[in-house]
Image (cartoon, rainbow, N blue to C red):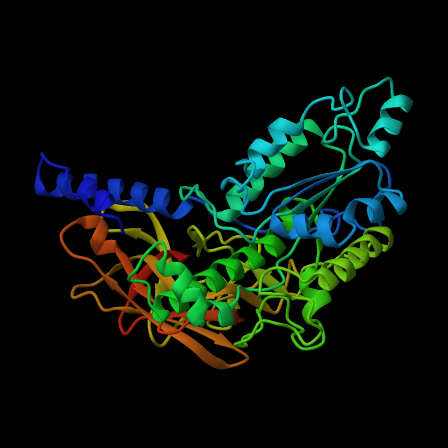
Length: 466
């Protein structure tokens, strides 16, 4: 809970002790709801949401970072696309770019690049394919508006806008593009490698880093690598999690490089040296000339055949970059609440003089479980979290003294992580909000259990990455 939220809860004053409690209670309830709702992403799975089949031929608009630069220089990206019928192929590549971080030269991020490319590029065109298209279309070609396919090769570089999650920034970029071209086929490439561990820990790398910071140590470089790995893993999960919600296909470069050794698209290879046995990945992030050439050929074939990767329907990914809220009495569509081997929970209606309060009655003898909703999603078997320590908060009213709520995360009957959610002190909000962290990172779970050594009335459980 933020200091600001606590401070607001302490500002109520005036009236009798009874009225003072009622005022703080309602204020606390509203604040908890606001905190929990911010940034929530609830995935709705629909067979009609993701477009299937090959990408339509005709003009293609491609926006990417240094990987795409390598495809242009060493992979023959533009001629290969155009030979396959994706013409004109308009590729905007910029090393170092992300959705909000400017590239190296010129300094343009993805959002700004879309603004710059949203124009008629026929005047002054030098590309033979663009000149041909212009001559056949009244000397008019807007590479975004006229595109039949739009490819986004974004997600490896960090974002400068820290006020939004990668998921929100994805939506910002797609909203901008779809305002220009709502009818194109949208394809987002996943992430192949988590960064270069070998380079991060080499003496040459440390010496290079010391040019900017003489105090850089090997451990600093290892920490930076681990941070990069964690960020790219979260982006990887988000790219797949949003593919249905934001209606785009996923091209998997990860599958191309790692499918034989690492079948799970949600787990980066946990190896020291990120160079693959074929030598296609040069430094753990970028591709060798041979890698670029082979991957571009694979990309073009995937566009032609519709060889895209769908999120497994037996997994429900949860983006916990911001709070993910589970209202126990009215849960998200992907969630099922059970207690006493029956759907739903034992309800508590009313609390003291607040007759409208509703919650679930939870004790150690009657724990509550949160599971995937196999009714709405018949193949659902597990939740996918982003392999991080998770902060759990529950809005709960218990008798004094307030015991911790025990929350366990399990997979196939085995507990993988546990959290003890304890109450704060000093304000009514703190007294009804129990929070704690998992004792280990969690990834795939099929059961979340909430229990208490004594009666607790719980109505909301929320999750967020620590």
